[in-house]
Length: 197
Picture 1 (cartoon, rainbow, N blue to C red):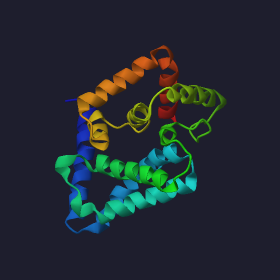
Picture 2: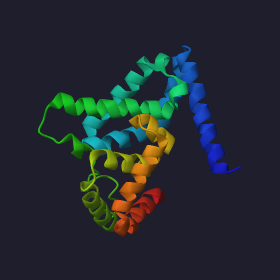
Picture 3: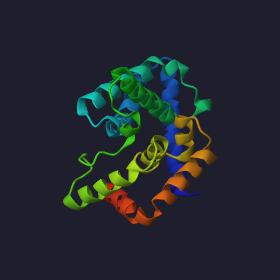
Picture 4: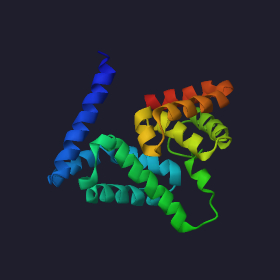
């Protein structure tokens, strides 16, 4: 058996066990889920707002809402992780709708060229290139690239977050990669640099 799959399955099982304990009234266990996911959810939200305080506020709302709704968590509809990401995603969308600004909601899925991931001059140049590549994609295409490559979500998790089939998500991801195939080396370089940091 592939140790990576075994490890991933064990992590999902541990999340499920903890979430079920919370659902059954042991809310003290929720702290474990918070500690495990707060940084990941912050990163997910930050790349959609580019604003530290707004991201922190939405992350707080995400965990408050998750805690308040933990009794409605249904493991048959997906993992705790995908449930939590779906809450965060919906709160980001709600935030932009409530602001009623002139900001194009499609643009919230872009990666910010000046973000914290630009740790060196070379990385900054590559991220600026990727930022330009992502501009040619529509919101859903950008979102699937960010969730798959930046957030490391599986196709199953992405399908549950977006409410699309796994096959549809795989097909969309493949189409997006095909669009930027000529420049894929730059994307792989960025991902490799991020994995090293």
